[in-house]
Image 1: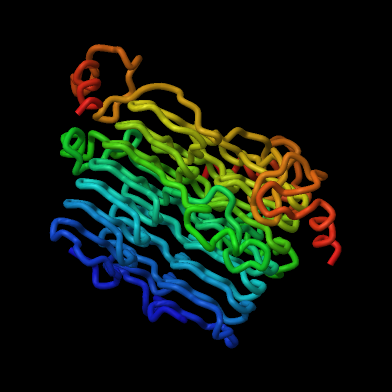
Image 2: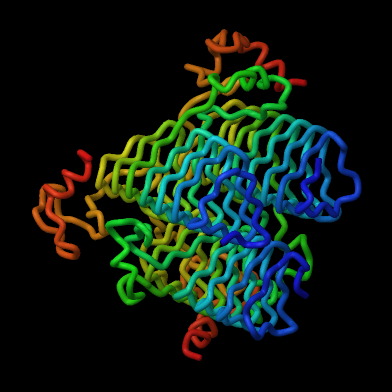
Length: 191
Length: 191
Length: 191
């Protein structure tokens, strides 16, 4: 399903992927199967999105951003790829933009990670598998697998399970909600 | 007035309500009279908006969000309705989304409340009547009537009048700007 | 270049300026030469934008906002122009909106300033020349020229050069990247 007002310029969009109203996907974006792309989303060429990802409304995904399968990208999550941005057409800084190696930084969002609404991910960050970023957080450094982080700058305040439930500790044997064990969670990281 | 580029799928929109460019209102959204809905706004089915509400640009209003009359919702204010979001199409978490009771939380924005630009409201929160949420605040707990809160997480730093003016205290008799008295403000809460 | 889905209602847009998809520019907006306006941007009448400015996606620029030449406005940067907003159509606050002098505040973004992704600029603020506002910052007071500020509320943590590079101090003679000297940076302020 592609909404009639969406603009999809990428060549190969799988039939199982939906794109909603006023979204814009540029040529060269890689998008997996069974992905949901909400209203007003923007995906730039060079962005990469895995299977079964949910991208809520108004997210921007730039070149240099890689999102693995099963992730949840909340509404208006903001990625970045330039640590010292200046106007590329400005008189004193445009030299910096002559070559992408001068400025383009990459972000990795590992399998199953959830990014809460309106969170900001600074450039060059790695968000661990099944980690959870709180709504409105500003993430300035890497986040471990299964970690829960909140605030500006984001700080870890706990752990979560694959199902999203808070855990008393990473080493706790059973999740009270989905019964996944700590060793099962560890196995997921190793595959 | 409905802008030609807006998509309004809800059945009964009052003629006194305006919807601006690139906005999208889904079936089942309830919207009152004399409401202004800005560019790039998204309103989901199950959302409820009262009379005389001003919704600035690019706000998303989800199922579970109830906004009472006379409220101001600043540009890009972000509501949320899921405390532990995971991709519903992900392989390990989709069971959680089989039933809305498993995840859907409600937010109440009481009469006359103002939410500043780009503020984030966490799930399950109640914003009191005529409270004021500062721009960029991340609200993680209930806000009392007439309270002013700012920051991430949001903390109360004062009180405001119905007209928006700061007050030295909630019990102060007269507002220096509109002359409303403390007992009048209290009466408004009781009606 | 004006994208076919963009709406440009202002009279005189220079041919060197680009406007991308789903952007909306209202009558009376002043926009300079060689400006780039990203997808989903909104520019209100009374806003003023200088030459060589880069405006990334989904920025809203209101009446009262003045952006000088060579600035970088990151994606989803949020400006504001009302310190005590209430719904203008609400029953108790609409008097406040009878006259713009009652509420409209101005913001000045001076030459070459960069505003990072999703930052929020409170009303009545002056951002100094070539200052840099970190991603996700909430700026509540004026920022000096060449200052780097981050956080909510934003606090200064350092200095930057015209090229964007961090500087050990404002008085440092040479930028390690572009070799601009401190006296050259000072001269730029005096022109």
